[in-house]
Image (tube, rainbow, N blue to C red; front, side, top):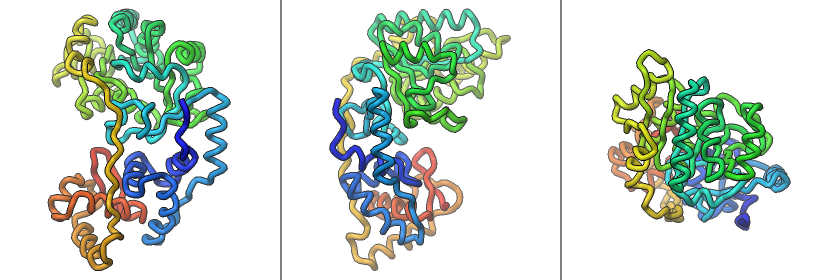
Length: 364
């Protein structure tokens, strides 16, 4: 695998203040490449009397050199090595760090997640499910946590497992899983959104969960409380239109309450690997296509100033501190979708609006 020629520019744009996954993709779509977007940022920010802390070139180069020393490979969204299922999600990370076998990203995958304080029976069942699914040529994706995650990795290690970690791809968490992480990096694949050396923080775990759900055709929960991270992963998977599956348990066991709730809400009840394969059959046989390069977004500044101001005047009154779906803004403003996207990008860089989950925006 080789890095794209503009890897430094891409990484600088990704690490620039206020540039999140959606904004990054919007900028690349408008300007065509990372360097052109970087060159345009100061002017875009000045329109809103705002200064952006653009990542210095030396910082990006140092990060790339650190990754190379650790043997971590960078996967930039929009390039062939980036996982296709994840690329199709709205908040896909602009760059991933990967240590291990990248070919695992081209195989059908299922996520197995669950309680950290798992029961012995739950861990044994998760491990056996992972063994059986791996033997059926499915890669197992999980989060390297104690309990169900560790059992799922252990069961699939010999045939294909992906560990998505909350910190850097070289930082084992929990620390007592350092040996397991090293074995996965050697035999499977470790994936991280954070740069090397970053210790996981509480805010990183929901971000990790969206990657787990995004990499897999379906997510299976084996034990989990109603407000656990496992249930968050399952709900993200549902929002992505992926299969959600759960193993039922005793109503007397708090660790089963989340799974039973998912089943009541429509998740597929799982009692064996055969049930999982049946649920995934509509997706696992489909070829995986890589993300297509987006059509360039027209810049609103290509129009006359009067037209731009008129469009802004129609869009701004529709915004409020309450997040609104972008589709509603397009409909109510009667402006072309591409023009709304470009105007919102400008307003975001000016500090006027902020983006929220579910393709929504609000006044900042």
